[in-house]
Length: 355
Image 1 (cartoon, rainbow, N blue to C red):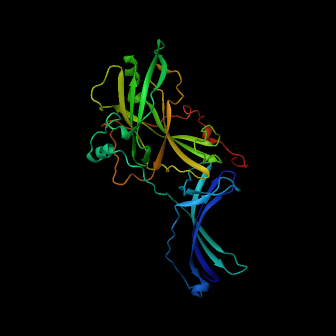
Image 2 (image 1 turned 135 degrees about the horizontal axis):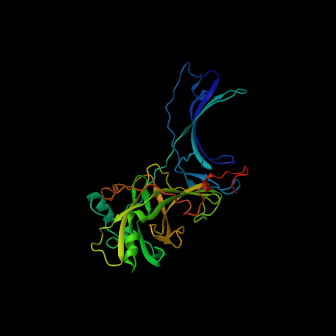
Image 3 (image 1 turned 60 degrees about the vertical axis):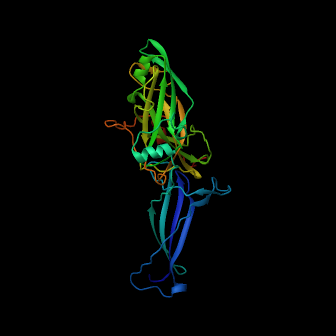
C-alpha cells in the first residue's frame, strides 16, 4: 500500500470476435478506499468488503458509429474454438500518485442472467404435480403448438414410392428452462401400413434441438439468414420417442409417437446482443430406416424457434415421461443434414474481422 492514493474495484465486460478489438459494454466500479477521504493508507494487510450490483440492461451498438440501444446483459460465453467470446472480469485497481504506475489485478468471472420460462398450460402443470400422463393436443389444445401437416415421400425396398403425412406438436409456450424436457407428439398417416410399421418407430425418428450462433452485424436481426458464413449451427440434443398412449385406440393408417428432448443444464440461455446472439430451434427431418430412401433426406420438414431460459416457472417442476428402458439416443451427425459441412464450423477468419 506504500504510495497508494486509492483502491477501486470494478466489473467490466466485452464482446471479442476473432480478429477484432474487444467491444466493451459494461463498467461498474466502486471506490474501496481513497486517501482524500480516509487519510493515510493502512499499514500491512488491509481488506474491504464490497458488493457490486450489475444492471439488467446495458447500452450497446452494432457498429462503432451506430446509435447505441438497450439490450439485456448477455451471459458469459467462452467455449473453446469459438469465433467470438463474451467475458466478464473483476478488476482491482490500486491508484498511485503522479508518474507512478497503477497496479491492476484482473480475474474472469462467470455470469449468467436469470430468466424464467413461461408457465405451461394448467393441464400440463396438473400432470407434472400429480405424476399423471400428459394430455395430448386433442385434449389440451392450449398446451400445444400443433404445426401444419406436412408430407415426405420416398422409395420402399426399391419397389414402390410411398408418401407419409405427418403432424407434429410441441409443448406450448415454446419457452423452456435448462435441465428440463421439451415434450413432443408426432402423428403419422398413410394408406400403406407396412410403411407406417417401418418408419414410425423410435429408432427411425430424426428430430433435434439446434443452436445458432450469429456473429457480426446481423446478430440482432430477427430472422437473419442461417446461410450466412457468420452463422454457426450445432446439434444440442436429439429427441427420443415411444408409442403414445394418448387417445386410447390406434386407428388404421395412423400411428402416434410421444417424445422428449432434454435441454441440457449446461446450455447457455437464448440472448440477442450486438455482434453475437444465441438462438435455438427445433427441426424434424424425414424418417430413416433400412429399406427406405427419402426423396429429400437433408431437407427439414419444419423448423420452429424456441427460447431457452435458466429457470423453470415458479411452482413448476417438469418431469420426464419416457417409459423404463427408453434412453436418450446418442447425438447423431446432423451437420450435413442441416446443410453445413462437418468442417464448416472450423473456419479461420482474416484479421479484417466480421462485416
